[in-house]
Amino acid sequence: MSNNLFLMKQLQRSKGLILTFGALLIAGGLFGLLYSVLATSEPEIGQMVISGLIMLAGVTVFALAIDKLQAQHASYSVTPEMIRFKTDLLANEREVYWENVIGVRLTNRLAEFELLSSERVIMPFAKTEKPDAVLKFSNCLRRAASERRIPVNGVVLNDQAAYAFA
Figure (cartoon, rainbow, N blue to C red):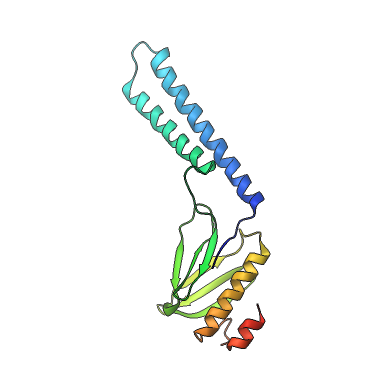
């Protein structure tokens, strides 16, 4: 099971800002390149290379904004082997394997996984504006944890109690 945690409005606003930034980089790089070639009597190779790199960065950012390059959105996935989640557009994807989990704490703001190594992995819901997606994810975690007899908020749920939350 996999779900997108971004609202379309939030995603469009982020993409609009990225698109503007990319356009500014392209314009700045193009201006620097044209200035170097046309306005100076002897073009500077270093300035031309830097301007070209700035334009390349702008094209890359622009391509991300118009979905020509794919950046995975905030999402989660619960499988029998692991929990996989990404909380931000530019964040790295995290994986937590069920075999390493000894406890789960769920609130309306986060999911916290306590691991065998005493490490705690926190998945914040702060940037998620879809309450139904957070509720669905929390219910999936409850069911999966109960099937493995892992305590949720300090209580080991039986299968029927976990499914009552759904």
